[in-house]
Length: 175
Image (cartoon, rainbow, N blue to C red; front, side, top):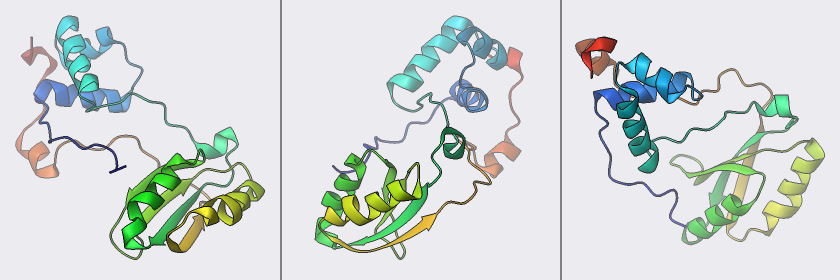
């Protein structure tokens, strides 16, 4: 595993950027409503959306609050690994069903890992049994998430400078 495949950057056009912004606000919006909000025909909206999803620029998913669905012990782990085993350790974490996120990082840890557990007992089993079987781990630091203050699925697709320099187009400007 070499991580999630990152393709060459794609520069969405102005309409696609508007579509992406609308999807970040409401991923369940119909294509008809999306076209109306962006100011294009439904055919254009559908074609643009098909390109965005087909090229994996966007995935439309639900964002779940772990606490509301009974995952009472979510944690972030910082993991130091033997450098020559980094890929194998990342693959081992990624294969575990309770692991939601694995990333190589700079700083004090080589990997950042998000783990979702229903109880502290389940978490303890992962930490003391499952993860200790992974060869190449030097050290870990685990932080139990007590409360989530902000969890977003979207972010600005333009820099503040771009947004200030280029006001958004009115819906009627695109056909």
